[in-house]
Amino acid sequence: MRWTIQVKALFDTDVLLDVALGRTEFLADSAEALRWAEDHPGRVAVAWHCLSNLAYLVRPDPREFIRDLLTFVEVATVGTAEARLALTYSMGDLEDALQAASAVSFGASFLVTRNINDFRKSPIRAVTPAAFLKAAGRG
Image: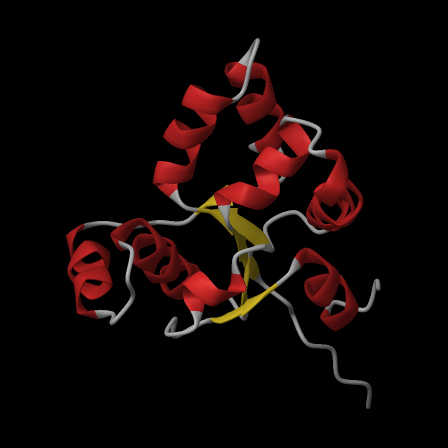
């Protein structure tokens, strides 16, 4: 009998911005992680507030980027309970705590980010895009 693990991940905004803004230094790994997500629909999510961050930062047309993203990435279901949960985390930044609570809500195994240190106290393991790809069997 062969066992397969269903890897699920929540992508932090910085990973998406690497691709949307063409951040050369980080583009290769972040783009490959996004391709993995495209090949595995329903296994990657973003936090709801990530979409508003993208709307402010992606130019010239953030709606096109978000529309394309939502063809293969889920939005983690969150509400009052998750907001309260985020407030209990001993994380320095509330936005990062909201990301972590969104990852918990989605049932993620990993929170994919370039800012590992920001998520040291996250209940979900934070990994870089390169480490995520390796764990997912594509790195």
